[in-house]
Length: 523
Image (cartoon, rainbow, N blue to C red; front, top):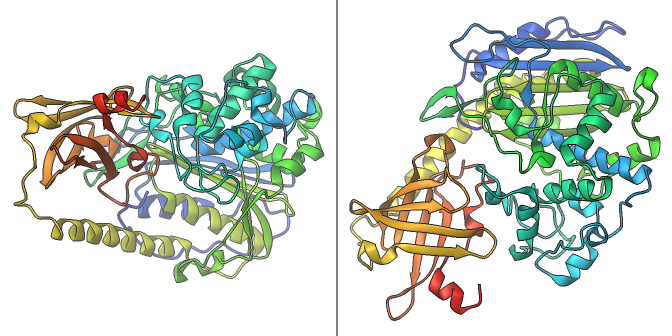
């Protein structure tokens, strides 16, 4: 999301709002500027106010270089904006009397376990949704990202082998894998897979009839935006994320037209118009109440209006303040799709920005510009601000790469012949990783992740760089081997080469041991 070219920076202000005037008059011009500045091929925008849709529009094209336009029905992967749907699904089961927010998960999934037995006994349904389990940022994501052959239950089962980085409920660290466990809870108590439950109990009731609940549906064709990303310096189409094993964390594909309906239901305490209620006001309070307070921090000077007094995570949604108003918001990110949903509940205003390009700057600049219009806020050029930050982030990434290269001792050779590094390595939570010698160089293959196939280039000493053959991954990694005194390999550790690598490539959490050593320790 940080590697973006900078386009023209002329300010296109939105006029001051007039009561009841609906969509911002200059919306189309602002969207055009955002798309040009951040090289976004296609975008969908939804705005609701007082229970009505004031805008549901598509912009640009579904695929770069092709004429098919994005319209209000074009589907985009909304990624982690799915999390509020999963939280709402659990809320429906609470209303049904089938679960309780603060009941331990093992009541519903007796086979489930975390690293620590006490945590296993005490982690609750609510804890699954709020990122305070003690796991590190993105821990366990390699079980499903890139797409793996593990199924949902296998992913949930393997969490028992993931060591925590903090004590239980003491710190916030964003995760996806516990939403997978939440999907297992939904299936266990309702008898319906997460996909069927969310489709029938939520999407159909809300009227999101064009949307779907599977990552894999993005590959099915039809009126679907093609994902794009910057690969080797050029914006181009990339493969959609096609695995359904973590749909509860990010599997929904939705359009501007449909996501507007979702915003209205959320802002109206679960009401669905003539169809009555999807959920109760009590469930709304649960969904929107902060569980994990966070430090709001101080934004860079370019984003000064974002400075707030409070920030926290509720159930599938962030709660914070923006220009004196309570703001409910979340973002989503998949290969080639990023999005933001934002709601001002006291003003009954909701905004959704869906894109088919990895540009957090694009959806942020547009979302804050639209909210400022409805709040009649002082003018602030969010597009120029984020463009400046993108330039700075790009420079920092380049500097980090240069610093790493400058510290390299290129003449330092490996301790062992290359064939001695080959073999099968085992990590307790991920499983097996194979290294083999092919035509004089080492090749790595993750056993459950077909696309994690790469070639090792020697870096220095016993460290190599893994160059993944699938260049769309953008996640090259160091692998470093530690030796015992007798010259045998004790273990290998990995970490991303670039600080810009997506956090879901949690290579740093792996502890790879040769299978012989792992077997001796009882693996």
